[in-house]
Amino acid sequence: MRCLKVAFGMEDDEKLIDAHYGDSNFFAIYEVCEDGSYRWLEKRTNKAKEMEEEDEGHGDPRKFRAIIEQLKDVDVLAAFRMGPNFLRIRDQSDKVAFFTRTRDLKVALQRVIENFDELWKQVQEKKSIQRSMQ
Image (tube, rainbow, N blue to C red):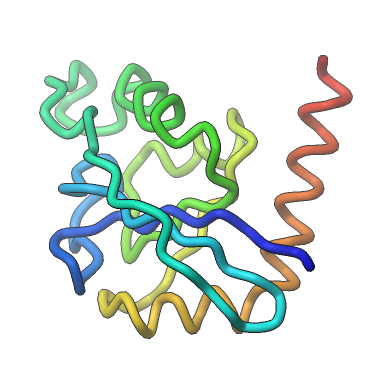
């Protein structure tokens, strides 16, 4: 069965953060599968949250790299909102960014499930590009 590993940028245990992804208090990591099932895997502290940013307060490439490094085993970065590093995530990583359009974690999980096929396709395309670059 096809499954994706998804990291939600969280404010608390029930709400996605209403700020940039890199400012999340922690990441809720879930496995979401094509049959609509999902399971919680872990709560991962955002080690990049307290980094001082050099680029006018947001979009620092160092913070981007720190986020990608701590989520290197994740396929999809799910967020209510993302900052300037969204373009770096899209263009310079093997991660797929997904906007949930809700801060409610349960609704956000449902939206990932509803968009599973498209997210799977994007993840596979990213992996294919990464393999061809190696």
